[in-house]
Structure formats: C-alpha cells, structure tokens
Image (cartoon, rainbow, N blue to C red; front, side, top):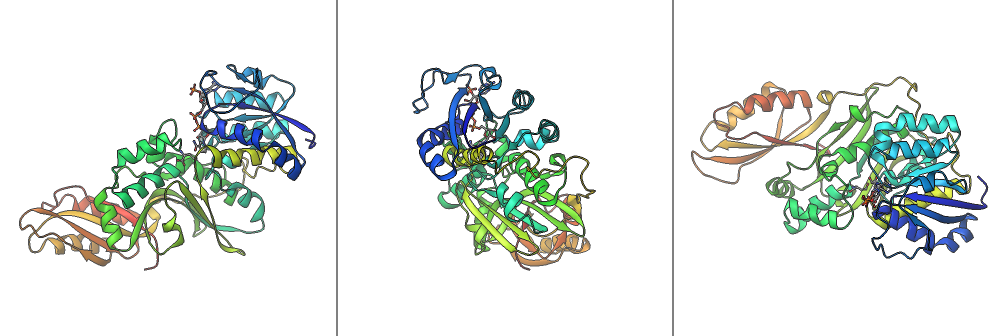
Length: 432
Ligand code: NDP
Ligand code: HSE
C-alpha cells in the first residue's frame, strides 16, 4: 500500500475502538508529518450508535452495520475491535476476501482461530496485524518479529494481563478484596467482556500462544498451554509471600527446556527485588531472553483505551507505510517445524505450600516424610500460630522439585488425618 490516503474502518466502538478513533483524529497531523501516512478514519460500525463516547465524529461516520465497513471499496484497512470469536471471525475473513488489510486486538480469536485467519491472509496477500493483542501499549510483537529476529529466543516471562495484576496489586498494597478490585478493573475498561478470561488465566494463555508462536516458530498451540488463574490466591498467601520476601504475580512462561517448549500460565511467587516483581497495577512487563542479545525487558500499560489504541494505530501506520507486508506476520503455518511441547508434570520449580495441619507433635514430620518420599526437599518452614489440637497454617518452601512429584505428594498429604483442608501450592521463581 502506498503512503497516500489510507481509509480506515473500525468495527467496535467500545473501550479500544474509542481510544483508536481518538488517536486517529487528534494525532492525524503528527502521524502524517512523522510517517508520511495520510490515515483517515472513514467509518466506525457499532451496534450502539447513540452512546456518547466523548469523541466528535462527522455525520455518517458511525453506523450500526459492519457491512458498511467490510463492503466499502474505499476502505483499505479494517480494524476489528469488537472481540469474541463470532462474528469477528466471519468479519475478518470477509475483509480479507474483499482485499482489505486487517488490524485486530482480538487475542482470543487469533490464539484459537489464527491458523485459518493467517492462511487466508497468506492466500489473499494481505496483512493481519495484531500488536494490540498482547500487552496493550508495549510493542512486544514488533520486538519479536523484527528487533530480535536474529536471535534464537530462549525464554519469555511475562506479566501480560493488566486486570489480574491490578487485582493482585490492590490486594497486596491496600488489602482490597478480590471482588472489589475486579469491579474496579472492569470500571476502568481493563477487563474482558467475560472477566473469567482475565482471572482464570485464559487471556494470558491467549497472549502467550501468540508470543510462543512468534518466538519459536511453532503453530498456535492454545490448547497446549497449562492455565491456572488467580482466583484461589488468598490474602493469607499474599501476606506469607510478603513475609518471605516475595510478590505473587500471574506469570506467563514459555521457554526451551531439553529441546522441548514449556507453555504455562500460573500464579508465581517472585523475589521482590526482581525487576518484574515491581511491575504493579495495570502495568505489564515482558522479559525476553535471546541467545545473543541476552536478557531484555519491556514495560508499559497492558490494558485500557489509549495504550491499546496506540498499539492499534501503530499497526495501521505500518500497513499504510508498507513496513508490514503480507507474509511478514511471523506466525508459523500449521505445517511448520516439528516441535515438542513439554508436559506440565515435567516442569521443575521451587514451591510454596500452605498446609492446614493439626497443631500437635509429630505432624510436621509426617508431612515432611511424604515430601521426602517424593524427592521434595524443604528449604524453609513457618508456623506462626499455636493452637494445640486445632488446625493451623504451616507454610513450607522447597528446593527445586518436579511438578508430578508435587501433585502426588499433595494428594497423599491431603489424605492424612492430621491435615484438615486441601493444601495450597504456588510455584516459586528465583535462585535456590
Ligand atoms: P468493548 O466491549 O468495550 O467494545 C466492543 C464493542 O464492539 C462494543 O461497543 C460492542 O457494542 C461492539 N460490537 C459487538 N458486536 C458488534 C457487531 N456485531 N458489530 C459492531 N459492533 C459490535 O471491548 P474492548 O474495547 O475492551 O475490547 C475489544 C477487543 O480488544 C477485544 O478483543 C479485547 O480482547 C481486546 N483488547 C482489549 C483491551 C482493553 O484494555 N480493553 C486491551 C487489549 C485488547 P455493544 O457494547 O453495543 O455490544
Ligand atoms: N483484559 C485484558 C487485560 C486487556 O486485562 O490485560 C488487555 O489485553
């Protein structure tokens, strides 16, 4: 596409749609001067054409029917910002078939249906750009696709769900309840239409799927990601973590181990002096390690109208200026290289356990006996409360252990008559 006039049509005038429209309108001159791209917002389709979004549009720009965007021959770039699978999938396919480039922030759609979308884009020689789909305003897709492209990527660790990080931060810093913090994140426009995606680790897994495909050249493998969210993290765990010098974060991890690739999302205790442990609120951070560049880290707002709008508009500009071309998306075709995704049971990590154990002599040795019989070695124990004959929390930190051994040991321990509730465990990052 020449950097002449590029007409843009947006589908979905919600949080991200509004941010995108605002930037396209308010910074049109800046964009033209800096990049040469004359990007014009020609149309926006949304089911609701009456709600005031605080953005002044010329008459006729806002319409109720997406077909007015998809079938307009003057529109060169269709921006899908409605979310969900259907009818977003059909709209994107229709845009590509009509010869339009596509920009989307819809990580769910790309992670779950990306194979057919990218195949169609290749066939139609069109771009599907998705910078906004991962980590909001952080240009992490560009980093993996372009800046680090001469490196073998060894690992990615990321805090890539703003809502979960916001909730954990509010619980840690202000003692706010989980539900109140979630409501606040929803009010601020951070959460997904279905907030279970945020708090159950699903949104993070969608994003990790995209990152892993870009980093390792593997097909999109959402179904293979281990997913565990933050819903079972309690104020008590946060307090113990803090006393032990850790923060709890919802971490996305993908790395090469013994020739296989780990794909996992779960709450993680991170030493509080690690840079990534200090990433709070809606902020996200992604740490990428490459074989030649070493460790790198990218930080910024991971959700919200304007940071995400900034990422969407950067894609539009890249298409308008020809910086992103068909076939340069970096997502592997399904028949790409052979790869092996490692099973969660083989993951090796340190662990935090919180047992609910009856306070009487010999109990700790029964628990540690089971741990020992599963090759799990203890590095620290805390029992603060003394209530003889009653259940009290006993916290144990371990050296490195295998997930399969941990799951088996916990299963055995929870059957002991001196343990009154199911044991909670959290994986721990850091040096032994
Ligand atoms: P919103 O719910 O705020 O906006 C979606 C908009 O799309 C709504 O206004 C909705 O209208 C409209 N819509 C739904 N169906 C149609 C349709 N058939 N035709 C036209 N318009 C339609 O969502 P967000 O802006 O928060 O999210 C949009 C996308 O961006 C999602 O894929 C999300 O995952 C992603 N994203 C969101 C971020 C954020 O911070 N919010 C950050 C990064 C990515 P109505 O309300 O009337 O149903
Ligand atoms: N719901 C998502 C989050 C939006 O909270 O991170 C950004 O992708």
